[in-house]
Length: 376
Image 1 (spheres, rainbow, N blue to C red):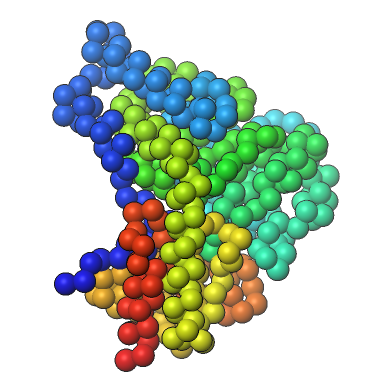
Image 2: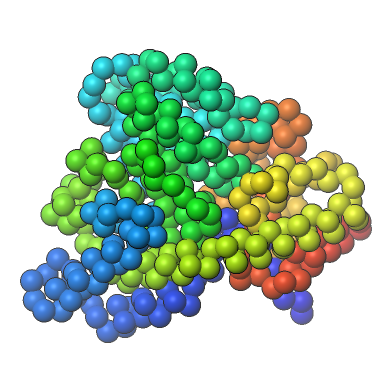
C-alpha cells in the first residue's frame, strides 16, 4: 500500500520528537500540581518557568510577557477582549480584516453587547491591508487593531511591521494572530501589543499556546480562579504540554530556514506536476507567501468531494481551514473576501500545506494522486 501523504501541516504539524521527550516525564512520572507547596510541586513550578524562559528568547521578549493558554482561539479571544474593552478617547470599535480567523471575528461579535463594534479594513488585490485606509481609520482612534501575521488558508503575509508602526504612531494597540507564523518565519515584536501563538502549528502538542503581551497590565482575565500567571490566566498549568511546546518552539526556530526551504521545494514540485497534467488548475497562493501552503482551485470539481476522494487515495488535505470542516459545504470566508476569481473558486478550492515531516517526493506524489482522480 502506498504511504499516506499528510498535506495538512497548516492545520497540525506532527509532534516534534524533542517535544515528546520533554513531555514524557510529566506524563508518566511527575504528576505534581505546579501550584502546590511541596517539593515535587515546586519542581513542576520551576519547570514551567524554565519553559517560559525558553519561549521568550525565541520571540525576543521578556519571560514575564508570555502567558500560557490553551491555544490560538483562546489567545485571540483574550487579546481582542482585553484591547477592545480598554478605556480611552476615540471610537468604540475594533478594526480587523475580512480574512481573520473566526476566533477573532467572533470575539469582536462578543464585544457588541458592550457597545463596542468592529469594522473590516479593505484589502488590495494581493489580500493585504491597504495602508492608506488603515491610516484613515486610525484617525478615529479605535480601541484595537487585529491583523493576522500569516493567513491560514492562502498563506498571505501581511506587512505587520508597517501596520504596527502606523498603529503605534496613532497610539492604538495592535494584536496580531501569529498562529501560522511563529516557528515558521521570522516574527517581529516591534510596536506589537499582543501576539498569539499555538503549539501544534510548530510541532508542539495540541491544547497549549501562548499570548505575548507587551504590557501585561493591559490584559483582562477571561476566566476567574486562582493566582496562576499573576491571576490573569488562572487554572492549573498543564506542565507536560507547556514543556513540550517550549522544546518544539526552540527546535523550530533553530531550524526554521532549512525547514522553510524544504517546504517550499515540496510546494513547488506539487504545483509544477499538477499544472503540467491539469493546466486548468488555478493557484490562489503565491511563492512570496507562507512557505509550503498551496491554495489551488480545480474548476468543475467540488472541494469537499475531492477531499474525501483524496483521503481514500492516501492524501490528507483540507477544503479551506481545518477548524471549519464541520461536514457542511460552506464556502471559505477567506476566499469570498478576497473577491474576483478567488471568490468564484471558493467551492472548488483545496489547501495543500507541506511540512518538514514530508518525504522529498511527497509534493510530486500528492499531485500525481490528485491527477489520477481528475483524469479518471
